[in-house]
Image 1 (cartoon, rainbow, N blue to C red):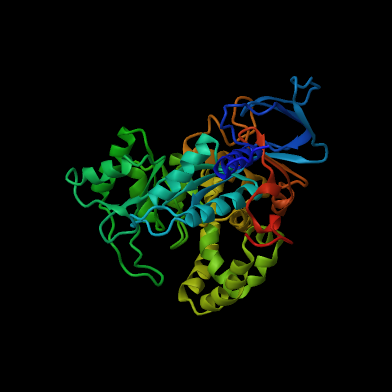
Image 2 (image 1 turned 60 degrees about the vertical axis):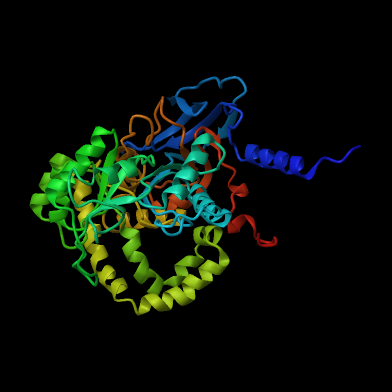
Length: 458
């Protein structure tokens, strides 16, 4: 028998691996899926519904019922009795690691892409089926987004900003604007990259231990937002102060990328938000993580971190980074301010149950679970925390009509748990099965430390 040329064999093997990971590169639809007997937590905030059957055909949910049904022909069935079914979790503030400097013109390297894919796999492993990247190198994040949408990459759904828009010497970039309409070409340059959402950097940073930087004046801010709206693009904005947030809301911004953290919210702001109901991303984890590393680096020994964080990186964080944060004034400032932000989130959630949105400002699946812990620790119920990480996140994206809850007609992004997360939010980590786009994710095939233990490091 003649030998197969190496290039042909490698190409064949690559296609085979992609297929094993559930891609639909040849256009095949996944087999129908029937999940029988689960207790359903549908993301809408109602009580859990016992003994529910969910049918998935293609990438959509086609039936949600408590009545006996016959499975579609060829369906795969999951016996979910004693288990709990929730919508796929979402993180609405990610800066996916691996991209490097946003200002470089160098090509994205295979190692950079692999680092990004490992981060994406950590999300899937943790039950996170959708992320929004709130600022990154455009070539890097949009390249991964293209592969995810083509079905050639095992990944959560990726929505992204690419580069951000800000004032010169402001918070973010590289698209800086200081005059309208003279600088509109800078916005067109950004729009040409294909952002799903515009992210605006708007923060004075003359607070805590940070220096003063520039802000966009309200009239220019409104012109930027109106221009993106005219192109059909939603907007979010980095803010941390009630005054800046209010200016942005009345300039027409769709969402807030962070909570108010500089001070307790006023009653007037809470009443205004009960009317405006502008989705506000929580991002408690990013600030709390500094002091957590300084004081309790042993959290990195928890199973979800051991399974998803590279051993060398865990050791570096527990030693070098922990020591660094012990000397970091910002860590201790944020330790003081995080409870303020937690209470602000609790009050916003009471003002409107569709306002608070889960986001971490980090780049890993375990961070999402820490965000849920902090929300609950701040006085939000576990049941509401699930809504915040599912339905409200879909509302942030402007896509609640197609995702975020377990309902007929919606995209089949689901997580089956072994325990009830509405009884204890820690149970959201007890993952049995992750389903994204109607396909079961093979968690054992993800490029993560948990799947390389006992083998040579790759």
